Length: 298
Ligand code: HSE
Image (tube, rainbow, N blue to C red):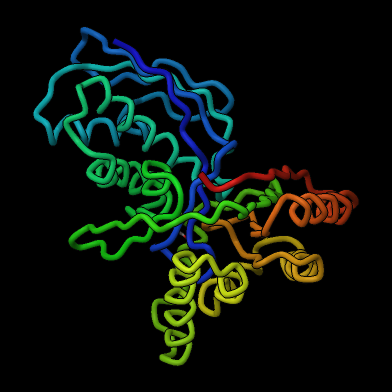
């Protein structure tokens, strides 16, 4: 009758894959408890850790859950409790975790009528509510784990990519408010062909690097000439952190999703721990509160 689950944080875009690429973090996420009720209603019964809407139609978990139940023609009701550990608006898929967790849990309690891949489209409805756009690059890795690639949105087709065991993700979250809706609105809708050529070259190389376990090529593919130059202006000390990452041997550095979190992808614990200490020291005197997490991709 009830299920307790961990709803993981995710990093979308990964520099060269705006709206199509994301990965799942192993140790940052929300705890959710989902229980059948006899009210034939989705109720958000409790949220701790964040001040978020309790009304099911205004809550990403509620909206995603309803999308799933409508598709099944199911009248069973559920109570959803969320312990939010991921800060809303931090750029590591806070809304995606709640939406993905809700559909995953309800699907299990109903006897798994859908595969995890099939759940993505329901979780995307939560993203539509949160940011005005139903992107899948956070919900897909939250549901599937590892790396996900959105091959197409219409029709929706999502592929899982191989993970590399030594990859580490260092996430720095400067605690300034940046809404996905706003950081999407500043992106230009047209781009130069040459920039597109560079970007899809890098994205294809990144996919190849995961299949051939080529960490060095992976690092050289983590580039973004289209979105990063526009969005990075909103992130305090972005250029300095990028320089620091390169100087300390990170494979790559970029904006996590729509920011303000940034990520440094590293090979191995040693490089990642060293860079973590460097970030800590760099940010310590900047008068901005920040969180720093070191995760594996899982
Ligand atoms: N691809 C989305 C964006 C992810 O960059 O707006 C949001 O987390």
